[in-house]
Amino acid sequence: MAAQFGRRLRRGATTTAVAAAAVAALSASQAPGITHATTGDSQGASDATPPPGTPVTGNSPYYTDLPPLNTPDKPGTSVDLPATGTAEAGIPATVLAAYKQAQQTIAASDPGCHVPWQLLAAIGKVESGQARGGKVDADGTTFSPILGPVLNGVGFANISDTDNGAFDGDSTHDRAVGPMQFIPSTWATWGQDANGDGRKDPNNIYDAALAAGRYLCAGDRDLGVKSHLDRAILGYNHSQEYLRTVLSWFDYYKRGTHEVPDGTGVLPDTSGPDSFPAGAETLPSPSPTPPSTPGTTPRPTPPAKPGGGTKPPTTPPPTTTPPSPITRIERAGAAELTAMAGRDFAEKATVRVKNAAGRTVAKQPVRFEIVGDTDARFAGGKASTVAATGADGTVAAPVIKAGEKTGTFTVRASVVGRTLPPVSFTGTVVPRAADAIRRTSHEVLTAAPGAEFAQAVELKATYQGSAAEGVAVTATLIKSAEDPTANDKGPYFKGPEDKPVRTLTDLKTRADGLLTLPKIFADGETGTFLLRLTTAGGGTVTIELKVVAPDTPTTPPATPPATPSAPASPAA
Image (cartoon, rainbow, N blue to C red):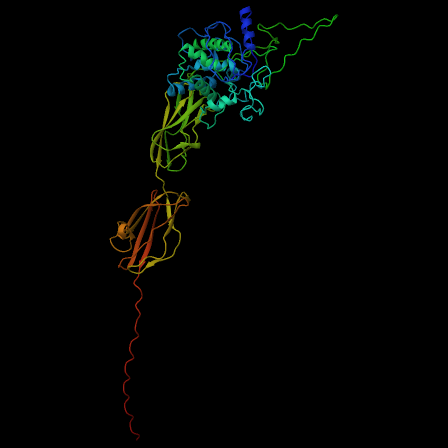
């Protein structure tokens, strides 16, 4: 997890002891799998032996700036103070939130580890300068990848490519990646998805901080025990100087720190010839000092900075008003969400985040969680997700898709990295419904007494004009249009043992909204009968069934016998 920035001396450090420590830092850990000898006691570090195997960072370089000699806050004061005091005590908001979330997550899953967020902050400081001063987006992902130098054995460890360049862009050798500087092979084992976006991204501070915390806790370590703590840090980089540097920042952050806006954190000094600038992809070679030529006047050299290197004078940054601490999260939308089973919720859980001055807070991560006995989920089947507030301080949860389980559940929204009371929304899943149902044909349904209706009865259910899938339908052979109770005579469905059944309740439409009824039979009654179908949601249709006796052949009437004619009168 070593940063892509150069190693630097502590500002103002001029003693031989400090200079010697810096030399040790620059020469430490240049080959994989080497356990380095102890360089002496300092900063309370022990002579713990690093754990076996390749360190997390591949022993890449790291910042060696040490914290200021002044204490950021008085002992016993809150660690959530507004941005006052030394600038080094300020940690960018999203980065700080990621460290605190990692501590809370691990405390719930591995309470015996006792990983403090200040330790993660200390490692993040020496590895990447807190993600380059907090240059991350609202989801915690760095604006550009943070890459360590190529680990090709030239001045650093020699680690052949393990990820085909997927994370570090190098298919020949590995490079440490992200704000916590994982080499790809280590990330493959310890990578986490802490921000709920479905990806394990070493360039995301939430993912990287949780991965670092879980690594430090490996092997049933209790970081409240000094020997466990030292061994965990040495597993990150096999260097006693690295251990002392991390412990220095750990102690500094434990004495107090505060939140600063993203992108405004203090970057370690990278101006010297032994360093390389933030954002550089590889370490540049220091330019050799040209020999002086007799008879020439050397150019004046800018005054050297303490700790080496030169830097032209710069204009101090403008003073900014410290932000007020976040004190409230409130509901900014409807408190109740309702959707039909299998459909998306039209409403979204929306909240607003405010600070102590009552102003809204932008770019603040908010975690949304679906809680309760339900199968409703966010996109991708996730039960929790993190989103950041916009410029107006509000943020809406992603669309929730209702499952098949009806009933109520809770959507809980909480500010990431804060212990503020969460905001809750009630979600309700109602049964699938159709607001219309119709027969798909107009063919007259007829049958003779005691016979089967030859025509199949097919229906289609719709909801707001679209096919309604999985909707429950009730079919009842009713007494009359005015009396919807089940008839006790006339057509029927066959139930168990072929017994007549005149009400069916276990019918459901298919994916296309269609439903084909079981066969219908006629008893000995003739006449016109009614079949009524109803759906959840109010869809209703009534169909006529005609039972007609077969035509009886008629015999034509017999021809009456002819009446005898009267005899003709004799001619006169």
